[in-house]
Length: 245
Length: 78
Image (cartoon, rainbow over all chains, first blue to last red; front, side, top):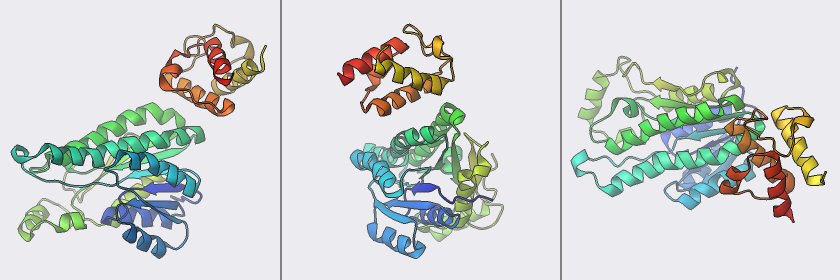
């Protein structure tokens, strides 16, 4: 089950904890992977640890021209893009009353607008091929909200609405569009939280622990597979029961 | 019938699964040939590839019938 041999997958934010795990998991199922992120060195390391079937595609998703160029580079390197994982994300947390226009705009640009541009760009090939998977890594906070993350929660909620709309447009072409919503996962992003914050969060997770990147990656592998062909427009929450939606 | 019209008709027949004799000059892709909005986008993509041309979005919107498509492509490839 979940064999991805012969499929090509582009993963953004592959330098991060979750993105790296997603790339490794897709690769382990047989896919050719395109690794995108801002830090070329980290991508090179990941690619060499994977061995073959991995292409390094550095890109800053904050720049519109770079976002336009990425799918073309990926398609040239891999021969097409069957699976797009919009995983890249940044945070610029601040209390709403103190949040600057720039903090708002940067998060929307990288987390939401780049996902829109990349998705738009890969659709042509997917529609022609009558097969495609677009998977957005959203967040529990896109559904529940979170103090200090008005910008991030807006972008993540936006991704869910965008995915549902696109899913409805292209379902008849065997292209599915879904989201995975991680809860509290061990990554560099959550490392920044203080012990007290972590303890408080832990109390809100019925599973009693943080999740791992691999557990998010497993959900992505499922949604990318042929077995998930009838699942579209959905958000799969992977959060240890932190929110049951 | 011009070569361009034949090639366009072939694409329309294949893509929409309609009878060849239904694809007449005034036939509207959506109203007469059963295309949905996504089909029209795909038809334009197929025309672009078949004829090696670019059809901008505003022009694509004006292509409503088989005749429109043949006329646009004939002018574009002239």
